[in-house]
Image: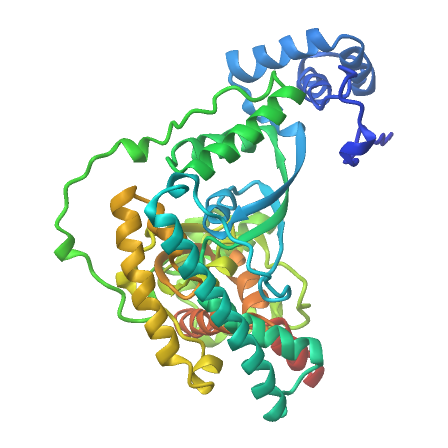
Length: 463
């Protein structure tokens, strides 16, 4: 056996972009040839480095002509994205096969930076827009200060930094989605191409500018791997006629829509299949005849020494649950990070209402927030009339949206460990607890260990 480091991320300040061979395309080209060449892969890399033009031609032939797009996944980019609105972040971070680390409004005190859309600059709307966002930012500062004082006076159970974090966490609900943030993104060429297509479908100037800059830099470095960047989303081409009056509103914060029938039997049958190769349907039929106590005992034994960091066996992916959730934009910022789940979301609409955190209610801030939201709704209508999609910039982290959240039980265990934990953001924790409760009711054996890391540690300590 031989293991060779073929490459790794380095800072762009250490790369000489004038040297043609300093491109990830050579890695992609070399790896693409592994399946058809008897040569050692390190020799294939040497050949690709020696002839970059040929490597690029090979990539174009294999990725685009032959359709082996996975070859482009060997080329990876790191991007610093600075000064992007919270609104557009939600679109970018829909990308499944990418990594993001973002400036958190829970931990960083906001200084009032926000995006003024290019579309309204030098128009009558600009002054009204800037004035209202400044009002939102001023209220954020007031609520943050009051929240810190209130928590301190009421003997908050936590460190000074945790106290400040709690005050920021709730005060930020009044901040606009136009608030600027920054994040680091690691993404392969194939996923980047799909992201560029998604940005292309958004007519807002900010989205088009982000697409332009990402595409310009990626194509300069790897022209053979990024080609199809125009929107090809067939869903956007469907012009469906429907009666909005038949649309069912979600009455509950979390509602179970569907769960896999005989989910517990399917999970156990999957485990048996992996160990003994017994047909899934045969095992399911036999397991269905077992007493519930016996199935519970099997799962309990499986979970007996489970650690907080452990993933459930892959057989848990045979069980799927689908939920309808209504939540604030602030909480959606947590939910959207679970990119292996299926997330369908509505556009923002002030008619869905908004969330006022318990701390802000305790501070008696409802009337101030309600008054602010009346102004937000009025400006939203004006911006939407000016250009559809523009109004969302003035909406806040408190504004609600509706989401369909579908995930397998393995992913839901991961979700619960993270979001049901005591350190999780309060609203997503509230949602996660409800999901835990529903799953434990529907799958009393398979979901018996569905809980946050903190609860699992306490449970293990008692055993």
